[in-house]
Length: 174
Image 1 (spheres, rainbow, N blue to C red):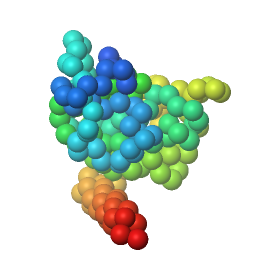
Image 2: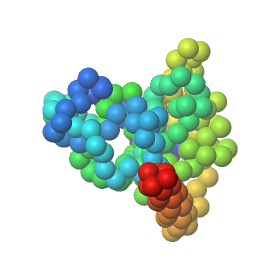
Image 3: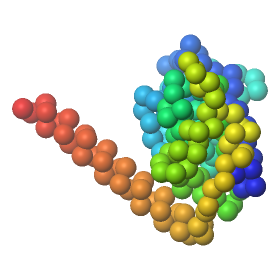
C-alpha cells in the first residue's frame, strides 16, 4: 500500500479528553463501540490542542492496537474534514487511485482483512504500525468501480441501520 498512500498516526487525545463541546473528536475506541465503514460525523468533542491531527475528509483510519488481531483488522473512511484524530490510530492518506470508502471496506472484509490481521504483532495487546500497512499488497479496480462498490456497500449499511432502528422501535410497542 506504500505506493498508493502515505501514513500518519493520530495523537494527543484519549477518552479522558472528552467534553460536552469543542472540536469534533474521533477516538480509536469508537471503532469497537460504534463501528462505521464511513464516518460522516461524531458525537464526541474535546478542547483543541496544539499539534492535533485533523481529518481532511478523505482518509482511512485503522486501530493501532487492540485485544486481538481480528479486532484491529478493520478500517473506517473519515469523510468529513476537521475531525480531530485521537491517539492509537493509524491514518492512511490514499492517493487519487484509491477511493477511501472502498479501501475501508476492502481492509475490513475478506482476504485483505486476513492479511491485515496477519500483520498484527503481540500477545496480550496486539499492535499494527504504519510500516505493516505500507507492506500490504492491495488490488484496486478503476476509481469509478471503487466508487460504485463503495456506494453499494454504504447503501447496504444504511439499510441495515434503518432496519435495526425499526426493530428497536417495534420492540418499544410490544
